[in-house]
Image (cartoon, rainbow, N blue to C red):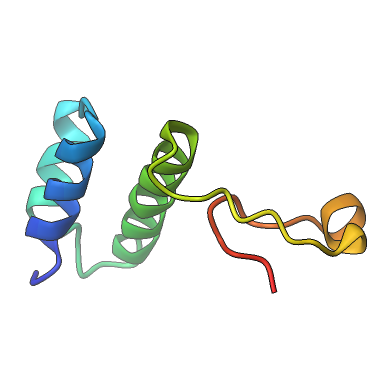
Length: 80
């Protein structure tokens, strides 16, 4: 997969230590099977949380009180 080197580079820049089986799956581009997209989404999401926790990405809290108190928001995604 074309995006694997960038994903692994980003993880390295964040100082991520991989569980060996997860790293192997990432290096292989996850899978074309029914779980491949879920694996990718989970890893990218976790890297985003790590990046936000380390201050490498803004956490992106929206200014809308309804969103932050009722609806929720996604960590690291800029609010509108």
